[in-house]
Length: 319
Image 1 (cartoon, rainbow, N blue to C red):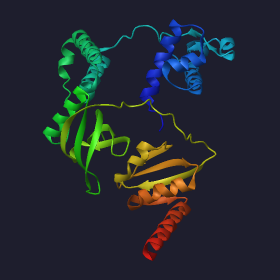
Image 2 (spheres, helix red, strand yellow; image 1 turned 30 degrees about the vertical axis):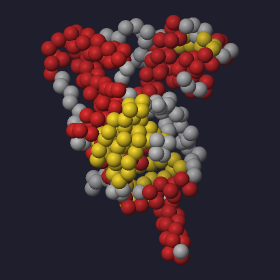
Image 3 (cartoon, rainbow, N blue to C red; image 1 turned 135 degrees about the vertical axis):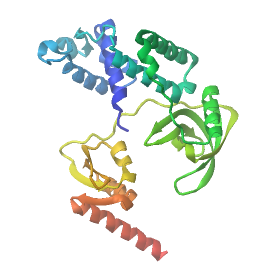
Image 4 (cartoon, rainbow, N blue to C red; image 1 turned 90 degrees about the vertical axis):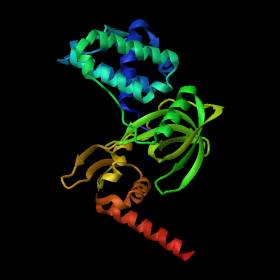
């Protein structure tokens, strides 16, 4: 799964502050500190090396000692103000207050007491500094689910206890599952419970409005979200370029895969351009979204998927 931009941005900012306090650190030690690979640290340094303040001439950029870099050490020589305390304008502070209040609403119950205290004190400080402007911000996240389900999920998160849920999936199949709740999420107009499902021994997202009933169990939560995984596929110009026009229900394609561009269509739906290294992967994707495919370029990819579907149907009919 590709790393999300906010996660990398936080690490890049942390990397500058860390190297400012620890000059001449081995790349391997920095990788261990941030929980990423050595190659990822070097890519982060390459990104920072071309980042800086407006103007972006050499004297405006974050800089490292090149000689140290060649020997496997990282020595920050110019931070361009990235280690100084941040000064927020009123508009920026109000936006941050809104974001922190949304964070408190969505995952506050799952935070450790110390983390909740940090969140609360940060909000209090920002509200006090912003004054009347903060009173204009009122964040309430709407959760489309039965109130008793939401209350039970929050209890499980707060007490770090396992849940037993009755869940109906998109094919109207009802199942009972024991899950370790991790956090509540919102996105694509729905709310989800991110959890570890013991029935399938894997991480799952459960739409809250599809949870028919929930019960807090005595068993404690035994799993936690792992670190973000690095992408195993990196698109390049060497890979085939494919354009797909899809209906709205297939929008998850643009959200889950590293597409080059997304274009909204006037008549509804959208167009995505992506690089493909594996014809089998593309065939599988097209079969998954077959009901929502409007067009494909080159056309051969759609013909290949259609041929695979006909062969599968023929094998099924022969049984």
